Image 1 (spheres, rainbow, N blue to C red):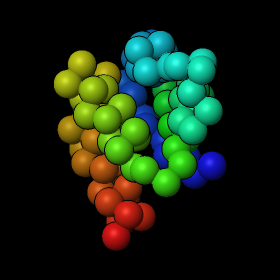
Image 2: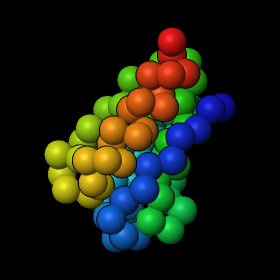
Image 3: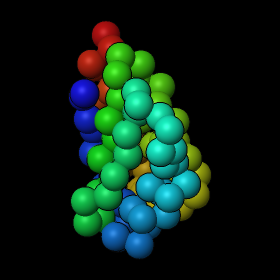
Image 4: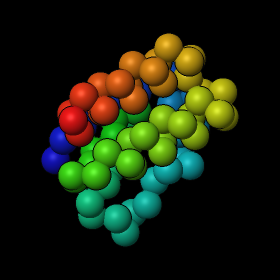
Length: 79
């Protein structure tokens, strides 16, 4: 499963993102914490990591430049 990493402001912010996005019943998408990073696993559709990134930005858990980096890297994969 492909993964992307989202760097949050600190481990507490990463924890909040994981708690908000986690779904134990989902087998096509995963999310876990690695320190201040959120590791987002997805199959095929990049919308899941983009949605998590946008929510984390709107909720104040990441900086704008981190959101831009993650979304640009995912867009390059999809192209």
